[in-house]
Amino acid sequence: VDRDLVEQARRGDREAFTVLVHQVSDALYAVAYRILRDTGLAEDALQNALVLAWRRLPHLREAGRFEAWIHRILVHACYDEVQRSRRWSANVRVLPVNGPTTSDETSAVADRDELERAFQRLPVEQRAVFVLHHYLGLPLVEIAELLEIPAGTARSRLHYATHGLRTALRGDARPELEEGQLA
Amino acid sequence: MTDERSLERAARSWLEAGPTEAPDHAVDDALLRIQTTTQERDWHVPRRNRPMTTTVRLLVAAIALAVVAAGGVLVLRSGGGPGSAPSPTPTTTPPSTAPSTLPSAVPSSPAAARVDYSDLGGRILMEHLGNAPDLSEAGTTEYHPERRRLYLMEPTTMTGATAQQFVPGRTDGALSADVSPDGTKVVFQDATTSAQTSNHVRVYEAGVDGSGFRVVSTACSCNEYDPAYDPAGARIAFVHVEGAYRPFSFGANSRMESLSGAKSSWVGVRDLATGKVTKLDATVGTSTNAVPEQPSWSPDGTKIVFNRLTWDDVDVPGASVLQIVDVATGTVTDVAVGALRPGDADWSPDGSTILFTTDPSSAVGSIGGMAPDLYTVKPDGTGLRRLTRTGASGGSYLPDGRILFQANTFWIMNGDGTVALPVNDRASDLSDQPQGFAYISHFVPNP
Image (tube, rainbow over all chains, first blue to last red; front, side, top):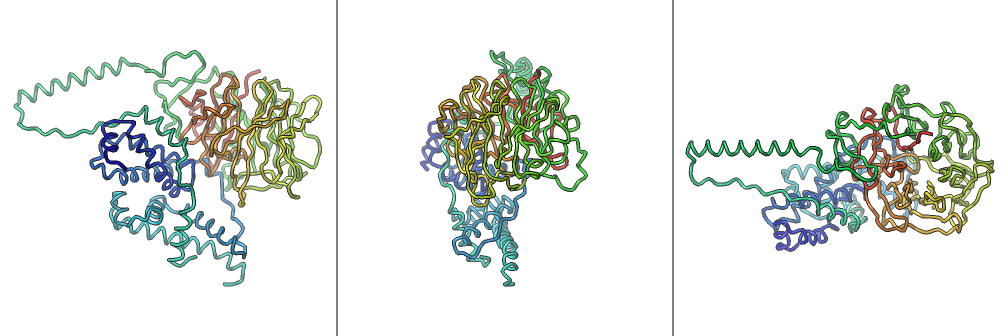
C-alpha cells in the first residue's frame, strides 16, 4: 500500500481512498469470509469496515500501519456481524448429514464438512485468531498487536480454537466409528 | 484427522478454499457510502504555552457558554430536517422520535417509534411457522416447524395476541400464499395436510373471510405450488413438479422432491374459472434440481418473474437465478444479479423494478440460518440496488410502491429503501421460539 495514498486519504482525499479500497478489498473480504463463513455477512463486514476506516482515518498516526490498522477494523466488523442477533435464525436446525462413505473422494468432502461445522461452533474471537494465524500466516505476537490484545490472550484463543476443532471432530467422528464397528 | 499436525494441515487447506475476491457490488456499495460519509476530525489537545489569568479564564468561559447557547437555539429551530420534506409520491416519513435508518434484526427499542398506519387501507396476511403467535402453544417444548399457518393482522392493533388465523383448522400446512388484487381471495399451497394423505402438494383458494374454500389443483401424479394471482385475479401462475412429494426438510425448510428420479418441473398458468392450464415450455427443468420457484406477474400481465433454485449435495439451497418468461411467446430471459442468490421476487406496481430477497430461504419456508437482504433490479438486469443491510426478507410491494417486509416483525420502507419503520412496534417481536416465526407478509387491500 502506497503511504502517500494513505496520507492523502487521511487529509480527506476520497479519490486516494478509493484507490486504497481497490487495493485492499480482496484481501479483507477473503479474511472476513473465512471468519464468518458466509458471503453476505462477509460483504457487510467489508463494507462497514471500509466506511469506518474512512471515517477514522485521520486518527491513524503511522501511514505504514494502514494495513494492520484496517485489518483490526475488519475483525471488529466481523465481531459486530456475529453479535447482530437474528432471532429468526433460531428456526433452523442443521440436521445431521449422513456420515461419510468409505470412498476416498467423499471422505475429503466429509472432512471439509466436519471442519465447517466445527469451525462455526467456535466463538468468533477464536475464529479470528485462527484465520489470522493459519490463513494469513501471522505470528501470534503480530496478531496480538494487530488486535490490541495481550499475547497470552492471542495464544489461548488459538489454543482453544484448535482444541475446539479437534474435540468437535472427534465428537463428529465417533458415530462413524460405531457404525463401522471399529471402536 | 484429529492429531495436531494433520488437523492444522487440513485446516489450512480448508481455509485456502473459498472466495479471494471481493464482489464488485460490495465494494461499489461501500464507495457509495463513503461519498456521503464525513471523516472524523483528529482532535489534538492544544498545548497551553502560558497559564491564563483569572480574567481570561472567565472571558473564555463566557464565550464558551454563549457558543453553546447559540448552538442549542439553532438545533431547536431546525425541526424535522430534510426527512420531513413533502414528496410528490407516497413515502414513509419518519416521526420525530423514530429511527431513520434501516432496521436492525433486533428492533432497538419498542418505544422508539410510533407510526400511524391507520390509513394504510388494508391488512397484513402473515405466513407463520411454529407455535401459535398468541402464545397458546408456548408451553410445548418444541417450536414445531411443521406448523405453518396464515394469519390476518390489522396494522393498528397487530400483535401476536390479536392475529387472526385464516381459515382455522383447514390451513395447518399452508404457505406460499398470495392475495388477489382486489383483496377478496387468498391462494396458497398445503405442504403437509394434502401431502400426508396423497404425497402431493396442492393449491387451495378461499375468500379472505374463509368462504368458498376449495382445492384449485386437479388430480395428478404431480405437485402444484407457489401460486400467484395475475393482475386481474382471473389466473394464477404456479409451479408444477411431477412425481410425489417427499417431506424433506433442511432444518425447518421444506422442499419439493421427486421420489422417483428426475422428472419435469415448469411454470404454468391456470385459468381460475375454467381450470385450463397453459404449460410454459421454456421454463421446464428437472424436478430434482433447477426447480422454478415463486412466480410473480408483471403489472400488465404479460410476463412472469421467477427464480430457479438449485441445491447442493447436502441439500442446502445453492445457486439461484432470476428469470422472466413472456407468457405469450414463452421466451425466457435471465435477469443478471451477479453472484446473489435471488428468490421471492415481486414486481413493482409501475413495472419498473423487481424486488427480491437474497439467500432465498424464504423460498422454502424459512429464513433461518441465512443472511437475507432485499434488493431491487430493473427487469433488463440493470440498476441492481441493495435496499437493506441488516437483515430483511419476505418483501412485497404495496399498491403505492412502498415495500412491506419482515425483520422479526413487519416494516414498511420507501421503494428506494429509505426510511424503514415498523408497521406497529407493539408487535415488536413476532419471531421467537415460544410464539413461532413470522416470515412472509402480504398486503390485503380493503375491498
